[in-house]
Image (cartoon, rainbow, N blue to C red; front, side, top):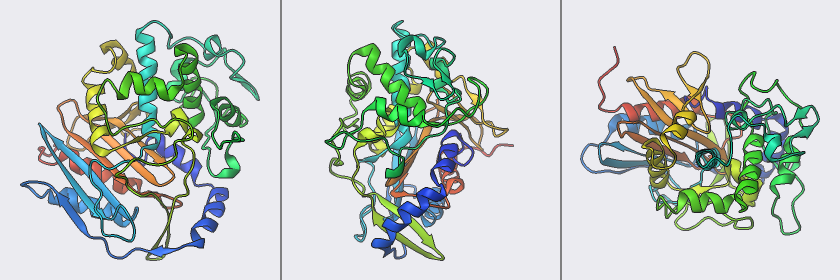
Length: 397
């Protein structure tokens, strides 16, 4: 899936509303910091990967205070970093540093759902109303007509929803955490945008509902299910689905910022700490470039769900004529050098991320430490991923 044309990009278009920009610009302007010319840091051995480094510099020039990519193939792995992971220090972003992964959480959520399908606990074709009666109802919604598959693939017709800024969030609990049910009700307060199955409209509400489904079927909170079923078995020691109330990033961490460009000046303000339960099964997780690579490689290799389940994840709804598509929590991206890569991108206050892997072992995972207010550099990010994944590959004729 190309970043500018993919499903997450549709979500990004809804994020940068005039309401949001006016709310967040006020916060940014309270403390503005200009970034100097970025330094490049190559954490590699041998080849300096000049083409990928050039693409990374272009991306970072349009992105956050820092940007990094961890890539490789055939048992080789290398990391490049430009700018800084902690303004105003000159500190490169490293492949083992923690950051919030945003919508890449959705692939973990989808993997647990497909495990439950493997275990005959859930049917992809069953209406969500069979499992969560009365949850998806009212305001034009009918849970007896929306299937689990449609929620996973964003073809449910449920309106786009991003629970940020504070004016768009559900009411928090007294301790500042958020209940999934309250978040779902808030998301469903916006009426349908299409009939179930008619089209693809990316909405976080789909995956918040799926988080409720996981909790109903397993009897455990969604963060516990994803930890016990995915994170721990794969040995992803630097990956976490924070429990409600766990608001601090583990160390070492990449600092996240709000961003704004005025002319040639870039301005940064540290992201205010928020409770991860606000995003829950749609975007709450924390990981690293290395761990994200390991997760998607294991998923594509069939180590997480059954071959049949993986086939279902890779049944994509085409996204225009790009050759890209969106499956069940998994995106397909057609590479300019031929072949396809699988993964997901994500955006959450403080960070934008993207991970792709191919079946022949190539991989690329990128992060920048900014929450875009305007001018989301999706084209530059896609070019960075393409360059890293096609490095050393014969040109397509």
